[in-house]
Structures are given as C-alpha cells and as structure tokens.
Length: 85
Image (cartoon, rainbow, N blue to C red; front, side, top):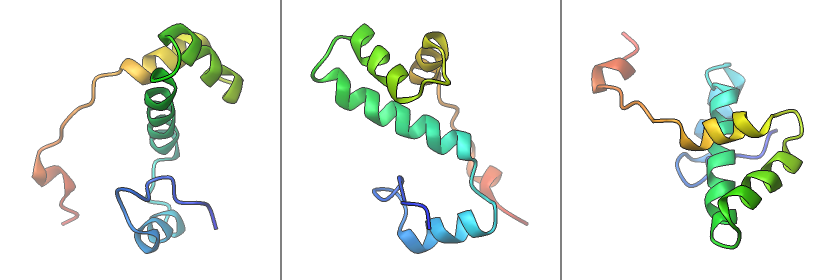
C-alpha cells in the first residue's frame, strides 16, 4: 500500500479507500507534497534554491512548472460541490 502523504488531514483508512476506489487525484497529491516540501525548504534556503532542490527531487518537472505549482491560487469550492448525490 502507498504511504499516506495526507496523514495530517485524513486517516490511513480513508486514504486507502480513496486509492482503492480510484477517487484520489494523484497530481493533486503530488502538488500538495511539493507545496509542503517547499514550505519546509523555504525555512532554510532562498526561494530559488528551494525550487532548485525540488527540481532535483522531481527531475521530470521544469523549474517553471514547480514555480506554478507552488504559487497557484487555490480555489475554494462551495459545500454543495462535495455532495455525491
């Protein structure tokens, strides 16, 4: 089973359920992990150096792509967006 990168937000059982039923947007989880890692690196390094370190961890992403992930505006959905029926 995949390690739960959202442990601080959802329990392992819920994460397993979402993965098992293909309800989790993998790109969104990856972007979340990148933003968390950036915030951690930013406390020790400059912005540019933090992004360079992230680029070494995610070599398939370009510098600009990582920058966009970090600085993208988050949309807040209304509660009815989450209702399944």
